[in-house]
Amino acid sequence: MTELRRSLLLAASVSMSLFLLLGVAANQGALGTAQLDSPSAGIRAWSAQRPWLEDSLFLVERLFATQGLTVLTLVLVGFLLLRRQFRAGLLVLVVMLAARELSQYTKELFGRDRPVWQDTDFLHHASSYPSGHATGVAAFGGLVIVLAVLGARSRANLRPVAAVVTVVVLIVCADRLLLGRHYPTDLVGGVLLATSLVLVGTALVAPLLPARENSEGTSPVEVTPLAEDERVLSRSA
Image (cartoon, rainbow, N blue to C red; front, top):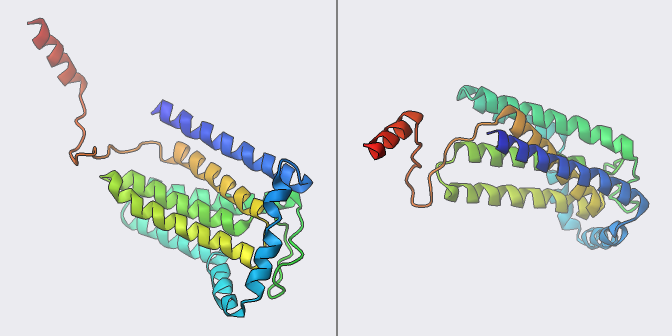
């Protein structure tokens, strides 16, 4: 378990370091970030020529804004508490709260201006890096995957969950580009921040992963110290 926790925290530190490095580079247009962000004006121009998209884009924006994610978080926490999964509920609550607060704090820290081509309806004035939508949805999706891992009896059951989470995160990120709210690096930064928080939360709050079934569908056999001692005695006899 110690090794697992150490690995999770190491991965979290790498993700957080990349998040900070990307934020500095994006503000300076360094390390290829300018080239990565350059298509975003064209993406917004493409969606602006298709007004039938607007209602769907604003719907996604509202659903995964702070209020929408708060509702989703409370529903998930309530479900976990009803099932008496208190550690899992605490994990979700702590990580989602940290994602909201840290995304706002780092927005102020980096102070990156919004794209000048963003949609003028419901104009956003807060700093651009990282995307709060991307941070929130990636954190929530990551927690759903973690909970699926904790409760799964087979790896096959995890694939649909991971696929749905990936699609939702991509839809929200595409929404931010199509409305011109963010640069691509803002979205990558939000996902990196969320990944770091989910990994830290998993390492500190929910460190015990249950055994999963192996690929043949049979539960792995756990050797107890007593069984190990009996095996040694039988060999010596």
